[in-house]
Length: 242
Image 1: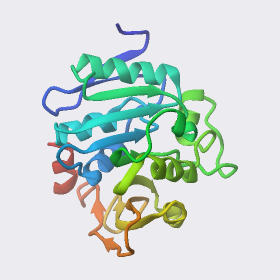
Image 2: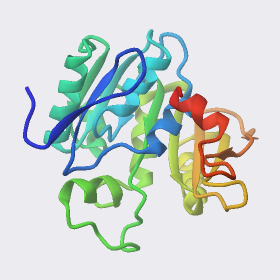
Image 3: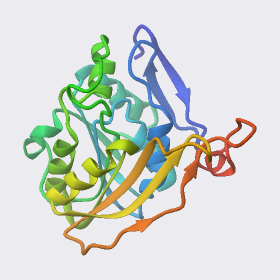
Image 4: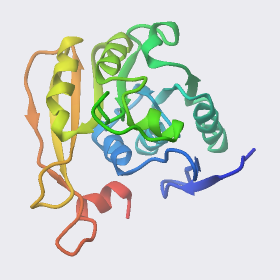
């Protein structure tokens, strides 16, 4: 069933499609970059926190179809739309969508059962940015119901020993993300900075933390989105499957 203002977008990945609403939050480049960075492994048990349209589990499945995933979304209408996307793709048995608040993760999902947790959290710091008047976009973009420490706390509950949390976050707040991971026993293990152009400062940070791991950080080569001709770089074309 489709509702008013909904559309179906082809992900250009093996026929997978996603339902989105023109008047609500829609996925962007950051979700695509995170799914590539997270690099799921065979038979990983995945949990995506704040899944929105369900785009990240879909992209992870497109990359590695042996995974199973649970996807948590606080907005009931968005959770319903994501669940309908999974049904449309025949993935109900592989990707389960749960309506609920990640701050109450202990009532939603079991302890220490997951290999990988992903999250594209709200970027707007509480009290630091103007709030979007649209409720759906406000929840997705501002720390109204989800701060980065909430994400780290939920991931620490979900992950088994050695499990990974992968997030995309504003580069300017990278230290906050690192501190939140370390507070909840996750050692930052990989960081990749994202630049719109090679001469521009980084605007996003991709970070992986590992639960109960020894310190040891790899700084990966920067990811640049556009070349000097304002076209996608070869790596972005690879990530998008172009």
